[in-house]
Length: 330
Image (cartoon, rainbow, N blue to C red; front, top):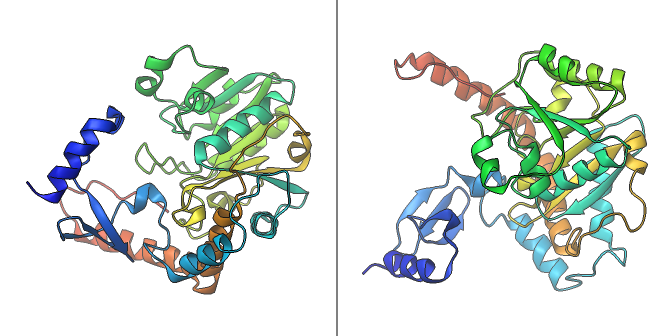
């Protein structure tokens, strides 16, 4: 029996079966490579499901985490800590909103979207609009927003009054939004559903529609944020400012952290006692996220992502392979 087979047997004995049995048991990672327990190396194209934006074992993240955990590991949000404030300041600055913005830290993308859901309720309205085939997470509120019936069916009834419309269709969106709509939830590019890029002007239209009806525009940047599209926030390509932005995945460089940013009046909706998180804003995770931001900027990785993305698209299209219908992405 290989070490992988041994670990798979142990996994099957104690782990819940929602993932099935993973075919590979990893032991270490370095940069873009991972090695399994039997010594076989792989190029990590999954990146921890869009998490490891700097690869494995990046020295800046290791240094930040080591220094912080040896100084102050966890405090809760009953106390102020420097890494949390500094990270919030940087995320707000990167957003570039003309009006005041505020941040709430949590542990994952679905938690960030749950808070966005709560913010929509605090407007006094209850109607929500999201996209068919969208993915916003697996907790109950986020799952209600997720436009995938197969994922929703086992857990119905789900909370909220959510209408799902075809993604990328501004007319369908306009028809679904009215003065009773609390918020529209959209991904700037649909991630899990296959990197679906909306038509030019779609997010601009969404901003106009929501503004006319006094509804929040919530952009889920859990997969598209962190510079993956050549801008720190993907919606910045469209020159708009949403009311709420959610982030996670690559933000912590491998550590669990999510963020919900609210702009303008939406930033003032939360008051003491309405929401909280035990681990959200943990000093170690926020220190790791600060390190990630500094590497992204210091090594010009956002511009590099844009350049390499264009190069990859051009090279794949140039192949003219009959099995390649088209290339999607930004």
